[in-house]
Image 1 (cartoon, rainbow, N blue to C red):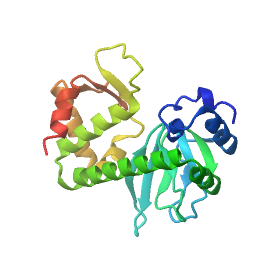
Image 2 (cartoon, helix red, strand yellow):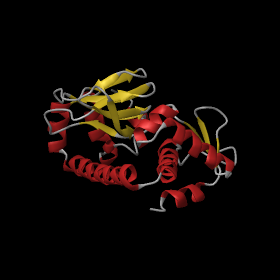
Image 3 (spheres, helix red, strand yellow):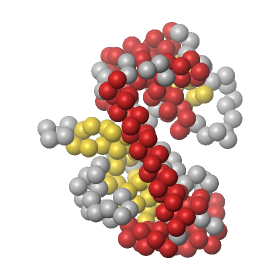
Image 4 (cartoon, one colour):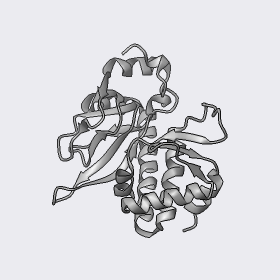
Length: 232
C-alpha cells in the first residue's frame, strides 16, 4: 500500500510507534480489505492467519455457546488492532457490524516484522494490557452493575470511542449513531430488550439524552451519565 502517510488512523493505530521509513516498509506488507455488515473476518477456533488495523467501521467479538447461541464479548472500533499475533488459533469470531475497512497483514509476516521492531512489540503489549483492563471492567459491568449503571457505562464508552475529539459538534450535545439495535445492546449487557428500552427512556425523560431516531443518540449531560456509570 502506498497511502500510509494519509491514513486517517495513522496517529492512533499501533503503527504510530514507527517512523516514516518503517511505516512504508510495513505498508508494503499489508492490503486493504472491505467487509460488509455481517461478514466475518476471523472465525473462532480457526488458525490465526491474519491480523489487521481497523481503519473505519465497527466489529464485534463473539463466541459461540454449546447450544448455538452467540455471546458478544466486545466491540472493536477504528484504530483497534484485531487478530492474534504470536498465537495459533483465534479465540473469538470477529464480525463486521457496519461496512468496515481494514489494513490486513499475514500473521507470520507481521510477527516477523514486530520481532525486528521492538517499539512495535512494546505498543502491542500496551494495547494487550489495556484490553485486559477493559475485559476486567466488562466482567464488573456484567456481574455487579445495575441496569442503569450498565447502560450509562455503555453510552459513555460508545461516545468516547465513536466521537472523534478533533471533530467539533455543531449542536449542544455529543451525538453518534449506534451500530446495532436494542436487542443487540441487551445481548451485550446481559439485559432484556424491555429493560434497555425503559432505561433509555428514563434517561431521555431526565434530560440526559435524546433519541431522535432508533439508532441516533444525543448526549446532553455526559457528566450525569458518567456519575451514574461510576456509582458502583
